[in-house]
Image (cartoon, rainbow, N blue to C red):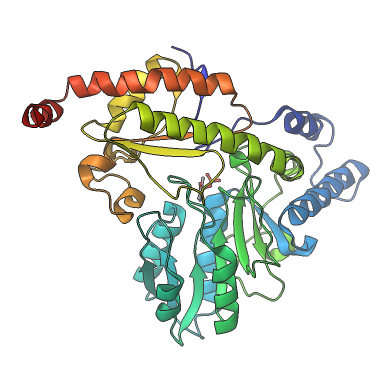
Length: 393
Ligand SMILES: *Cc1c(COP(=O)(O)O)cnc(C)c1O
């Protein structure tokens, strides 16, 4: 069945109509290379700088602190590898968390092979780090703390301002992967004392393959990509003008209606959560009850396999996601669900529904009508469930 209800907005979002309309002329009319001197190229250059301003404004940064990249993964790589290399004379210790996106975790593993030491902070049952553990992990040779703003699986929002304050006091740089946060919750790099921040277009209604990194003035970062002089020699390559224009527009739009949209999404999210928990026995919410992304609902159902749930939901026209093993391509369930202490069998039965602008109250009703039946159907087929039920009677 064709997808009727898309509830996987943490994976990617459709490009917003206003964004698409803004972008089209930059494919067809203003296609000039921003580095050239003739008029048509000046339009590209102008658009590039306008987008830089829009992104900067959206996160409380200065225009010259924004550098465009090809997405969240590149920005994360650039932050970690760029700072590690620039500060290798100063220290070799990096602090991050166990629940980061793989763009951070796999970069850290690479850096460990290069001789860096990495501390992976644990999180509590709600997915929050401990500021106390963070403070105790800081050593004289610590050069960078990288803690994600909001988690892509369970939606938990970290105490970013407190982390920033601590890092600044200790003289350690602070990077945050804010790919899930920008355009969804308030982000202010000044107020929150953030030194580096990653964001990505396709998680907020802009095209895929475009993102940005915020680098506070004076923070040393070695480039990853060498070539032309673009992005003040920090990131070579002819700029993806349509993508960048789309990113700027999407950030501007998202920040402009964030308050109203947050209120709307929190209502839908909380309805989804409370009614699923009420209708399905042996289900539990993953992530923090209140400090969570407005659109994130992540629930585990005992005795079933997430992957089977996704297939049945897809057959009903619902697109969702799971932290089960099959989805991740390994035998272990998601590292995030493991880090919050879920037993394997519960982690395997997780369902992530992520709402965004496109979702309506009718979508939520539809999903609420289908999910309990799907869980029941799968449990009826589960030998494990049968065994447990037999023991209970
Ligand atoms: C999606 C995502 C990324 C990767 O961004 P891309 O633009 O897809 O490379 C990084 N971190 C988080 C938290 C994400 O959700």
